[in-house]
Image (cartoon, rainbow, N blue to C red; front, top):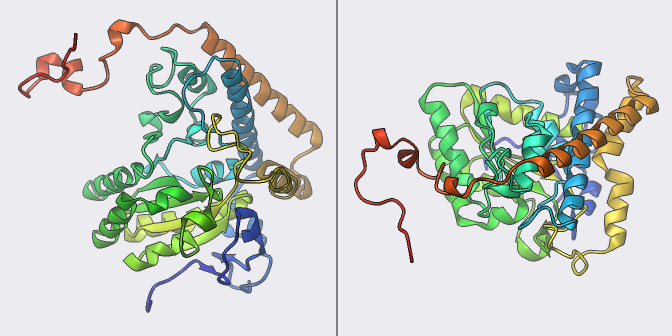
Length: 388
């Protein structure tokens, strides 16, 4: 489409899984002297050159903390301490950490049900998150939300939403509010590859472009919509190209490289802040576990596929290797970070165990604002209906 700018050049292919996408010649936001087919070193891009050594160590530490938190929550689920669903983020850590690290004070986040990584990346502590998984009163949503409903309004983090694609119009509304108030910020709205086939997503794209709203839709494409491979559930690729129909800039990048994620996000953030234009970013990533812990994950992909990704594209291993190469990390320092993360995760489980359950009398609290503030109630009628 004439005049439409893309951040990515690539050959048209249809990979059967996300691991095949690495073979595509992809270029995302290159510097001027980079060629489209060149293996890019994203550590040399301006957004990453600005990072101080201690900031890089912190980014690695955040990814390790997410990994250890998820592993500890899995063990708690298997022990019967967590009920319902548990959607783990293991393998996708660089997407949340890399994108959140580029945000500013007026940028906001909303995401789907695989939300633990984003929550920790924005600064929520493990205690409030683990307690929420346990359904305890000390959880971030007072034990009423569980795995899919982490929230931290004080950190511009607006959840965890369980309806597939349901967060996309909410993210649009947040971007509308930012523009309406004249705030130079954006809303990062994350989704999985399966959510791109939901109607509300396209309604949101239409309004985002029509009204010039600073929303960034981030497709965390881990290759499988629940148990169905992308090649079997979506026609056309890449998925981000669907933004083109609405005159929205799009890009494709790899989520196992934290530096690359930061480059992709930074350009979209600049576009949103400076021109109030939306973006659609597709970030190729991979989850090591099933869609949820209830998913046996034994029918739709092979163990060899999972192990291949772990060996060659694990985001933590790759970033650790980069920092070792840059001379700002040692194996001893990494082992120390890892131990701290394990200890913190274990302590959060102990905190959750010791925390009280919500009081049944509080069941209807925090549902409607007017029931929590009866003196300021203006509506008529009954909000809750009791049944015998």
